[in-house]
Image 1: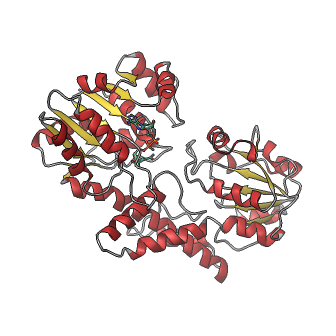
Image 2: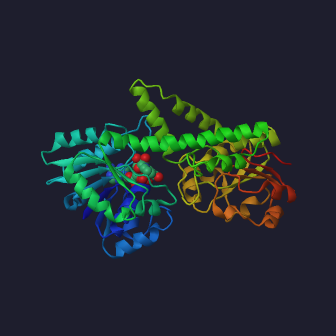
Image 3: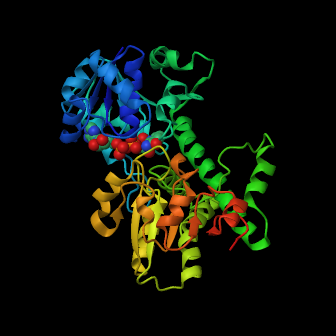
Length: 436
Ligand code: NAD
């Protein structure tokens, strides 16, 4: 099939590349000229495991091309995916200007039937709004459908190639037929393509992300309580996770959820409820608990070193909002950096993939280490903000040589408590008994 993908961010580029991988001809459009030039030259603009191989293979076989020319892409494509940003507006509602703007541009270019697929996360009613934009600008028939994306950064290729489910919101038989054909190769193992109406499909994505954010937040609160009553959150997690109704995943406490999706999606769903005169109380609690959770690691540092950190120097392992990505949007590490610096401290950080983006965002507010051990030189403590695998089993001898003090504040519970006692560390983690 001939496909166009508008927007080549984490979702658009993975979608375009993975659709090319099953033999489709995909043309990707972005307004960012530099990014498009890079991709035309075979340079991948994001870090996503496994994506580079597919990206290069499909470019070399001419199934995957990049352009800034929307008209060119629209002309050829039967199916047009929109994978555009939907950032929070000032009041927390999803900003639809990218979607509606692109819809307007596309509507002026169509000359025959197309399916317009919205992959972005958007509030209920957006498909209707986009359909209205087309109706206002063209008499050509188009089906605007909802197809929310559930991929996780860090395992996005795997998630796209073998999705747990594909959700498609449309009542158009013609669109159902084409989308079933398009997604067929990805659900060969029998995972479902779930068809529903547009409004239910749009809400499904917000419900999924808000449910997951709630699950994490619940565990963060259990962890905080564990510290007060002397329980171990790891034991509690294992104890409840083996109940199939609860499940083992998404039960790890930490520094609050971050990233480009959960914070904005929980907020947007809460706003959307409010606009419909519904008081979605759980979501309000989730947001307020999450704000507090962001401060837990720095609170521990202040409790240990006092409120004035002037002259103190900290090592920070992890900048990305989670492992296996270079995405730093709403990353807990950014909050940690700001707080430590505002108290007078200096920070040296290391992250396997996220340092470039942080440098672009905050420049030389902190220093950047060449590796994880380099970051520890002269540090009064190590703070851990992201659970990259390389941090899980470090060389503790080398760490001891570099750190000024054997003090670790671990926001990801990477190390065994007894081991840290044996090694003589002050080791403070989340929801586990404090040891000195
Ligand atoms: P992103 O910010 O990484 O990428 C958006 C891209 O769109 C950028 O490259 C930007 O230059 C481009 N763009 C903006 N306006 C454009 C226009 N008019 N024409 C062409 N290109 C344009 O965004 P993302 O993380 O890929 O998210 C896209 C959507 O998917 C959002 O609604 C998000 O909530 C949703 N989503 C994201 C994820 C994720 O893990 N990142 C997962 C599921 C759903």
